[in-house]
Image (cartoon, rainbow, N blue to C red; front, side, top):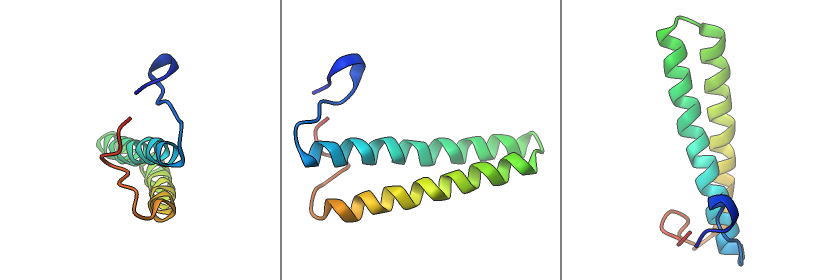
Length: 78
């Protein structure tokens, strides 16, 4: 179920972790896509920056996964 403006409704720890996981997982993929686009435009400084951001978000994603324990973050209803 979603709340205001399509935001997920948070009523439990599982909801919170699932929402956070989804947000961070999308950020990882978007930063990787931006890095690839910057490679196409031959901009090595931005390639490095977006790769660094993707790595940082991947660390956050993995931390959320560890905190969740047995909660299935991918198929948790949103």
